[in-house]
Length: 240
Image 1 (spheres, rainbow, N blue to C red):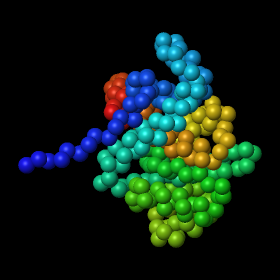
Image 2 (image 1 turned 120 degrees about the vertical axis):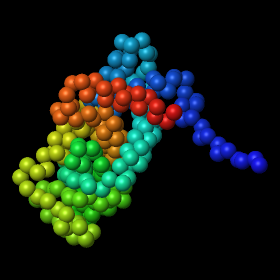
Image 3 (image 1 turned 45 degrees about the vertical axis):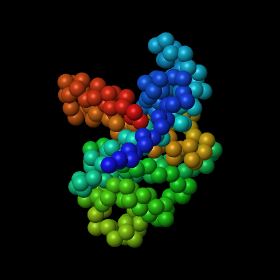
Image 4 (image 1 turned 60 degrees about the vertical axis):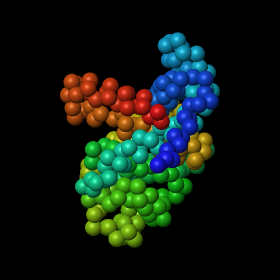
């Protein structure tokens, strides 16, 4: 009996002259580290790779979302049965064209960035949209740690999980410290010009940060020397 084999999807690198290894390297350097497009171009030139900074821009725009989606898909699959999560939620103030916007972010108790969401307003409606998005992707948390912003309990009351909220001095340091890599990246990019570009980059940056985040302040040097090559090897297999 003949069985129809499922057709393999075409490679996203098919029509590009450069190798997938170089494309992955370029995207990783630009998203992971606080580098400008021209910084990446110069570092690649030192390695004998001649690529224009506009090519760097094109590649991260084209492949960044694909790599981030692949990382998130694998992580969600591995964590699907684990629900004893402690979330830490906070919002970052980001200026776009002189107008204030708000980047809502949630991290778990291990420092993994779970969700990023950009809004123009900082109110109950925005908080509710953010919580719904996070719960849809990651399921229910055992506890949600927030600051004293009143929109959090109001939104959680609508969702019926206000009893899971925790507040307290220094309890939310986990998420506040996680803002720092994003802030460094924001300065390197000379801020954002559109709300959509902020949402796109924040989401990609979160997944790439998760992939390479080794919590080096909690583990010894020997463990770092083991996990770092593993993360690089897994990165080279994305979209293979």
